[in-house]
Length: 350
Ligand SMILES: [Zn+2]
Image (cartoon, rainbow, N blue to C red; front, side, top):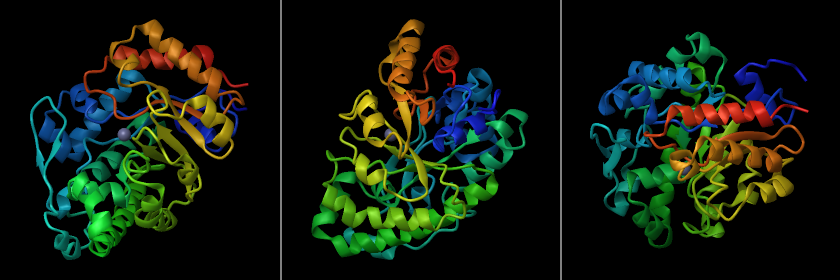
């Protein structure tokens, strides 16, 4: 094992199931970057310079090993006409959906990531962050939604679920266009300096769709997108939000080396995940962003990291300690630092 690994080396080794000097720590720090950098809501979401400033300020405050630079979920969707609402102090929200009628799926066209929507914002932010001495050695895996997840950003999720049953062919045409744009966008993010992607398969959970629906409407496109990425190192991490994640299916997707999920709130706890899939995929989990990180004491946070390490780091690799979803913009920076301190204290390599 190499001592004093850089953050990016540490994260990549964990994903490859190679020994690490200590367990890496990640944070899905999106809108909190605006607060860290003292940047307004709209400026942060619409300017790559401002996003880079905010993300680097967060990095300086916390020292995490991995970032997922982003502001909100609408970078691609706004290119198709989804309207955002910007309120100072709050994360941007999807306000009006682009696809209003099922026929609108068939009118969608592939987007240019350099011109359409706000895809240029994270692309610019990543390239600027890579020029920073700390940004250069930190793992930067920007969020990119999978086609089915994007579909729920251009049309209300309940309508998409109806379309799966009532308008499957129209929906599939839209999904194919979304997949083509996703590939272009992902490759521009790599070109800008991303060393991987946080590929959001957020709808791959049984309380949202059935496994057969996921296999029909999402999995083939996930495989298509992941197989057409320029970067086949496999450092991409999937992100699933739900409480009944399709872990078996997700862990079989190509060119992704890790899965981030809400182990503290879903029906899949880290101990079971380590036993069943720990050799197949890197577990990116362990910190409850909804309670412990928000209202827990420093000791609560350190104990949760310790517990995660005891259950998920049994072989000295294959774990990145992380919250299960975006952290609240109000999260105390000192609490993220407490995660780092606990990783140093309890998560030394073997
Ligand atoms: Zn999530």
